[in-house]
Picture 1 (cartoon, rainbow, N blue to C red):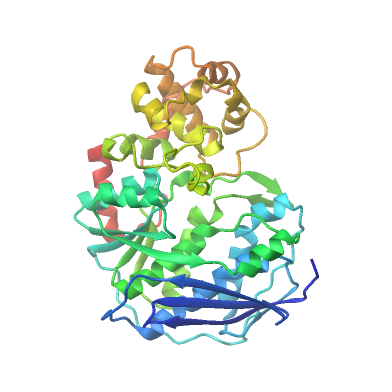
Picture 2 (cartoon, rainbow, N blue to C red; picture 1 turned 30 degrees about the horizontal axis):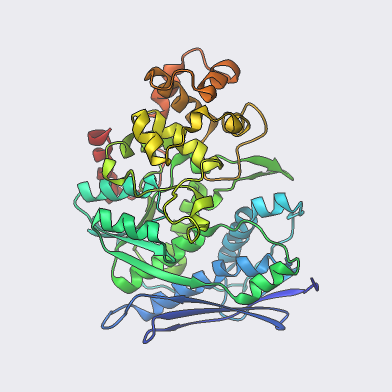
Length: 448
């Protein structure tokens, strides 16, 4: 691919009549990228236009990451707005950390690579903000897995009016929303076709921090449709990285972690200028704890999936929710085996018993930190995996399972395993949940 020297944030726009957002970028002003998002019907919706404009600018910044990574130009130019030094530092961090896996897999030296331009002395004045109130109308971004179900039900138990938000159409989400009986808002995202043409010609490609994009888009939806908080479903172990590279921890889930959550909270409050809440309700919990809560909601067992592999090939296999071979399938199966009857878990996975699949031994060794490092997927810590397998073994339903036998023989099992399990099932104080919403955590104990 031809080298380019400058990545340009050209412009962005919002057409309220047609419910369309347009994001424009270019390489050297020569290659033009246009990304669009189509929103639900907007007739008679009232919103703060200045507030929306600042949020759209933030979306323009995060949306550019998919196009910037094609050739990593040395210079970044912003025509669509200005950044203070603090704001430029924020986007430097989002791009550097959010592209960590991309840098690692492509063996790119990212040090001193990304420099968002700052305007000396610039700081856009914002109107004074009121404090966050214990509001009722909340928007929950949904990916189709167990975590979204737990967040939804905890909020519902606390008396909140909940709606779901998704980026793009998918029949799995349709089924989930119908089962949950809550409103579902959809934004259809269309990446620039030029991006796929460049990838076919050898442009750099790889993982981007999609949760950062979804977070900001969810904020825009809240502004437009009158929701008072965006409630994510990111767990404690999302902050746990995968591998060290050039002096930096590489974390596949960086934009799902606590560091990003706290930084984005600050950015949204100080730069976008609104008191709409943004936080993860599940942050104080491990995947093990979340799965224990999920086991109380059997109505979702047949309408959830965490498998990204089968999510992508839905057109070919519309009824198969789990591939049974990827890290997500292996990890979630182990979590469920700790709390859900064996027959039910196997039925959820289309008749596959992953704890008896010898082909998954290398994958489980990675998940247990016996060899290699944690897979580049949204999976939990080795401690969570070990705790789940020990709990599954104690049910005696999984006797002779090859994965459990391997764990018992090869894993570094602590002397007081039950103390570890108790720790993994404890709600932590480390989170960024606003005070008005902390009472929702009381329902965790009621459902665990």
